[in-house]
Image (cartoon, rainbow, N blue to C red; front, top):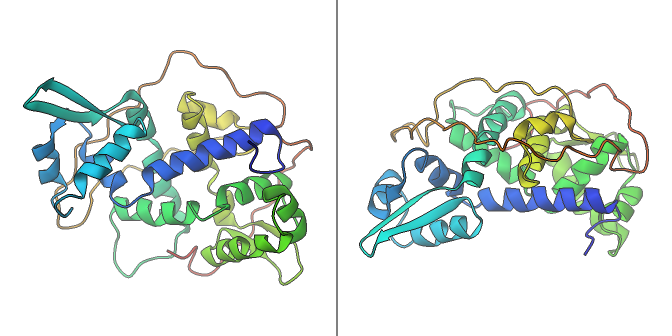
Length: 280
């Protein structure tokens, strides 16, 4: 069932990315995925790597990640069970450095140097606001949209004034700009800078190689390589093993050449980032 008034392909694209974000955003999920980088682990070995989780918290998190298809449970014998990444889980990991790269450029600076994992968690909080993905999609494609027009597209079955709470939140988060009450909305430079992240998540969620992100009809374009930096879950905890390379399928259907929206889009200059960058 459609969730927006956008074309079906676009609606499905947004829904898939929203679901992908919902898999990894819950607290500790990314840390568990990073702790599983490397050979499969027994439950006790994994628990030792994420020892800050209270008793009883790890099992439901693992079950949710298994249900999402990111982690697999392998029962070798009744007393020997291990957990490791699925191929889909491995393929998702390269998205994480992209999020760090975006956060370091656009998020407001913290009083202390933040580990990469905290940069990821802060960024995911912004991306999973209600209706955020659909609003960002429309603004990226249409450049500048009034609140009323945006409501008709993003929430066609709801009262149009319901668009303003999520819009105000995205403005406060620094991802959307407006010149004032009654004026159109557009992506900020930080919102526009999410192109590599959202394009890659779209490719992953559609089962395509991640390099297909550059051909995405809305978020496509040259993809900058993320800067290399150590992966740590906090300053006081040991770093998990290095991220394994993504396992790419040999072939996959390419993006449709046609624009997913019913109108042509044009490039626009980026707007200035609000002082301090998007809020954490």
